[in-house]
Length: 165
Image 1 (cartoon, rainbow, N blue to C red):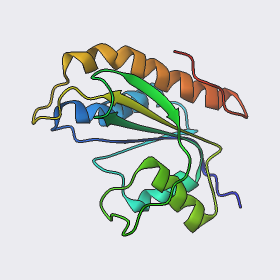
Image 2: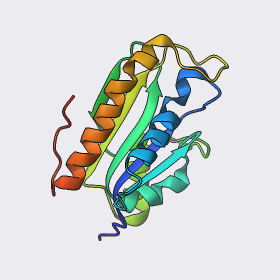
Image 3: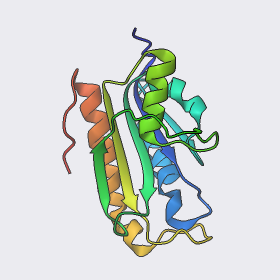
């Protein structure tokens, strides 16, 4: 069943009051301005991903998830494929992961995006504050380029293209 209503969905999460955790919302704001004239691109930013976003994911042809990573080196930019994965027992009602959102979209709406990637930037600090660490500031050009190349690639092709750094 195809329920595609948007070609490219950018879905970020993060807390703008917790230092580097705000990278997702920052990149979403940048992408919203960058793709403002492109009706095929929809940008959503939340403090946390919640189960209700499964419908938005299911209705997208391609999804770029954006988040910070406490597992990566500070400022390290990574982009990886995302596959659906069911949540463990007792799905949290306040926070779900990108693989869980894909699984929810598949289970509830019988639909999966053709492309699903997760872009992360390693967090140096998630302490209270509204500024990024130096490593994250230095990583912004690379992260912006990856967002742009990914979305432009999806818009210009019928199939997934590996983004260029």
